[in-house]
Length: 453
Image (tube, rainbow, N blue to C red; front, side, top):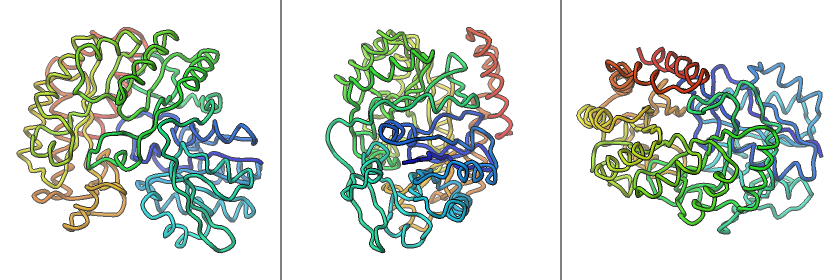
């Protein structure tokens, strides 16, 4: 069977990835985890191509022409809440362009009510509920009981739950199909890098995050090792580890770090701040150079309300210890939760300056499907629009005290408050260790400031 994995065109640099679509806050772009993981499952028995129209800067007509030429029997395409109307227009056009091909979708916009989505969008044949599920590969083989798949069959919609085993296997992801030169990651130490996963979902229950509803599964270690070996053969040692909370299961994390150390990888990953000094040290020794840590808010009330499982003291201690271990720290912050006010946001800005991460990523709160935050926003009438973009190009929801314009203004002020501090740029330049790091610093720095001044 011929299968196309498609990240459809967009008018801007849209990230349709891991059920958290957004516009790129700077110029970063990486291989979509959804398509990457499915490539391992689908390429075992099928002819597979990858078209990342965003990375290629490909317009809709060109993308459709390539698909018409390939004549896929099945297309797995990404769909994004931040770009939903345009995405649906594209898949309507694809249906007319390749009328006999089946169209399946993956993404945040189709998670909450897949059966209802299929009833309203007749050009779509099915929804992949989890991108590590085997259901689409089973469907391609002609099976009818397909794990993690909701699909149309003879006028009836069938739905099968995702697997819940502790471990999952997708085979070796076809990394060679995702070597777009346009992929760029400003925290990487080298220009060429690969997106990589060693688990799926997250075991923690943060109420603003869709990961809490996806379940948590570890990837088989033998498969992790095989893919690392293959990437080495491709000449790629730099990784963006897209695990949503690396080290969530300490024993698994330690074994993965041993593989990274053995393979001499260099990587960036997401980590909770409530780790001990031994963990931060082990990360550094395994090749990790940058950690993305959820600071989120300075408000103890907000941290508790959204079940973060840690408070300000652990945030400060974690970031301090990570830096002492020699790791660069990127702090992520959420602005615009219902409880937020100008005072709480300014307090968070003060905390960010105090802990002094190397970088900070300010995000607007978005009421994503399957989250407790969404229930709160909808029940209190706080939603501003159906589209969602945490990058801050617009606000999807108000707070109880702040409107959309105020939130965007505060978010932009927070970015300026951190990055335009006297001496910050000079300090970053002094820590750059290669021409690429200098290039990345200027490229993304100018992009971030350009969107917030």
